[in-house]
Length: 284
Picture 1 (cartoon, rainbow, N blue to C red):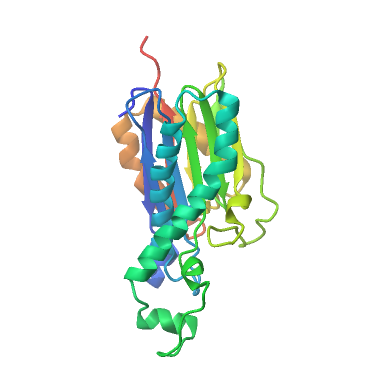
Picture 2 (cartoon, rainbow, N blue to C red):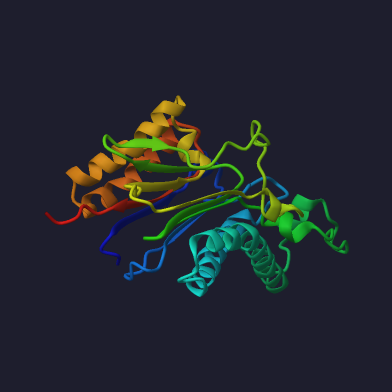
């Protein structure tokens, strides 16, 4: 575990999914190495869950697995690369690699897992009918959000809805490091299943030059939508930082599941997933 960062992650099944019997379609993975030279990584994904996206719970798990594994290999291979070159490599190569590898994983899972009767019914297929050519990627549809931070840089990649926050400064201020996506209207979202998915990622990168983030938070929209207003969600970022200073790390981790469950119950009823990196105070 890194001496620089405390890491927290949790995913809870939404209240509406508990009532309907639907699975948790979110997924989360984190990787925080002990070496300060290597980046800490967070990945969160939200499967779409519609009738046509009948394996999106598996699709989101594949997405975060690919995100952590491929990002780790990619970034480790670029250790020592000048910052400007590193930014170009991440922005122009990593999204395409992520989408391609996710599709490879989907193809393999699809090949090993024949369509069940209820899945064929969801597609309106007769027993003898073949599935449409685009079915695998649509069936596993998912968003994907990735954040990485090292001593050299911070970067974020986001495809689809959900939120990324950074908290920094004195007094601490929370802000979204990525611009909003105007294509995300109502319940519409971009997805890994789209042919141009690699082009649709939002990207942010900044070198570490004195001001280091105190907290990075990545979540699915089930969490951000639980707040009545945008300011309330931003306040949650600074609240988590304050709580991390007031509570022991284990106490905060134990409370997280209950807080997210309450967010779903009192909010949208959706699955709620969150991952955080909180910078540990330097010993005095």
